[in-house]
Length: 238
Ligand code: MN
Image 1: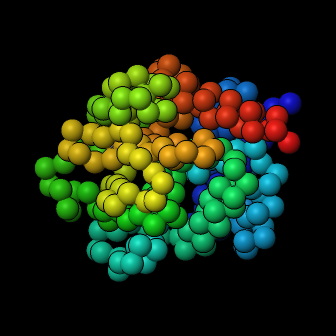
Image 2: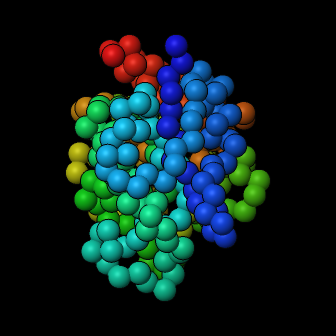
């Protein structure tokens, strides 16, 4: 049996259609999973149902989490916001943890997971750190933009090795780390590029986009495989 991975949707700005980029689906399928696009979950009960039915959850890229979620007003350089999606993903993350389901976060995913665990974000990297590494690239996203250093002994280092070249399509980053998370990768400017959950079920979130590197980079394939393997393992307990 293939593990079913719930994929959180983006909402089409004009018509509200839920969608997600095809790369998320192709990477999960090629890693042995059956991905399913979730709706925008309207209630905690719906989030609980989704978390129960799925063997793993992928929190995808998208708009900036609302700064009110970490006690700040939006600053001028904060990007577009989607409060419905924020609420849905906060419910879903809590319920996924309650159900002990493996979670992978990508880009916005690492940010909303950090906020869900009580952490905070820098609302705009260039606005706060003019000397920071360039974190916002133009296509093609298959080309890495910057180097990251991985924490020795971390889950991510076991998957990916001690340093890695990654792409980068973000203008926000983790400021204060959420509870039970450890920072396991950083750029040379000190910004956090990946987190793992301490103890508990598989929880890994990255600020880059491994879905674009799947073809060309073994480390990106290993990352998806590790997530899908964790979901398969969790499924075998049921
Ligand atoms: Mn980056």
